[in-house]
Image (cartoon, rainbow, N blue to C red; front, side, top):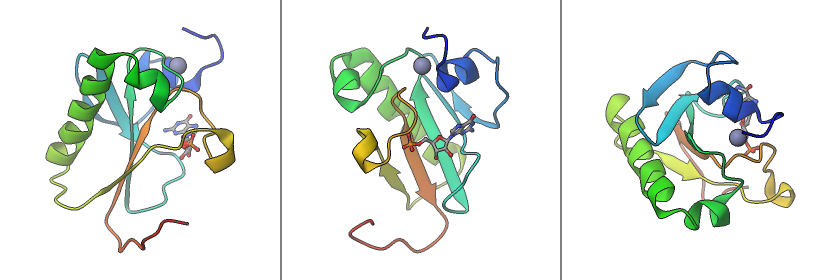
Length: 112
Ligand code: 5GP
Ligand code: ZN
């Protein structure tokens, strides 16, 4: 695991987080700077940098999708938005791939 990866440290339990869902491949926890009443981050346990990196690991990719479904089931979400930021230019700030799961307020389209 990269020494400085905050999400690897959360997966390892070295940084506390509010757990929402966990399984073999993925871990989900509340975002510390929520942008909606429900704002959960879903990450692969394995360190992968971004969505293209995740796509190169089919087990981790399928695992992350299952993790998103697990969050929706756990929180009984029927309507939710899922966002992957890829690259600093569109706002990726943590380079351990993560899905944002947002719910609980009206959402506009297109996203800003
Ligand atoms: P990005 O900007 O990379 O798409 O999303 C990174 C997200 O991680 C942000 O929404 C930010 O609030 C969240 N975040 C950053 N550091 C931590 C942390 O230590 N704990 C938690 N729970 N969320 C974090
Ligand atoms: Zn990592």
